[in-house]
Length: 371
Image 1: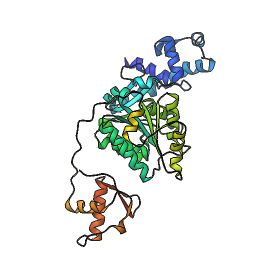
Image 2 (image 1 turned 90 degrees about the horizontal axis):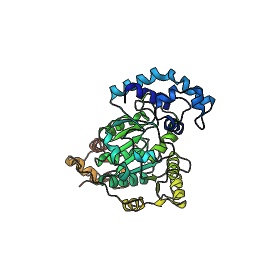
Image 3 (image 1 turned 120 degrees about the vertical axis):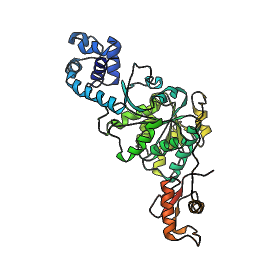
């Protein structure tokens, strides 16, 4: 496709008021975006559902052409791929949803899109998970990723981040779908995580790369998360949450919904428990996820092995003091040869190596098992 044809495509798809469904209807009627842009008012009105307001929008959309040209040039400079609905690389799973995005801006390894039909699982949940939620999300994401499944999530705080990081820890592919442009990473604190993902995985957004985050964009991006996935797994979610919006999209897209049960007196578990009551597959293990998939296809496992984690003798001693549940630092049985200062500095090093986390300033939690 020439740059002029690409501009026509973007001009029509990003014309204010032309949503995904309308765009596909227009292109289907005329086969090319340029034919729609050049069509007369009479010809456009002849298309079912196209009124005077939309005709006016289409005819005035040329005003955005210069801006769109700048976006294309920026994509070329930033090595951002532009995948159109009609391209061969466009995910077939996403084409099946009610309103697939006409354009995907992608940054990273496009090859990740090739195997989604048999190996993609969305993992979503609350931005404020409990330690239980983090632990279960990490375990399930690791189990899936190590066996070749692609983990899809939304780069948000909480469960989304845990899912992405678990996939990366297993050298598995992961896709982050953004509610902002690719040059406006949100939250900004996840910029480093976004860089890690695009090394072997993929960042995806349906909005122009320069677009800032906006509250209306996040529910829209949730349909892409579920649309790219065979199934959506929810790990901790309140009754009113973005994760449940993603689950609702999955239902509308005829995809499987899975949920991890939570404690009945915890607000962030109420959404998951309701999903299970309403028929979602209850998930306690990796095997439960496989059993719920529409067809059992085992992808090729990740072949790269985890790099051995090197710990100093002191780091190993301190790690062995820390149990698998959150523990106050003051309650750790400190050996006589270990000073308080040495303990604190060693804890900082272990946290940097992602072996432990600090839920509070005075507590620690082991996060990985060493082998």
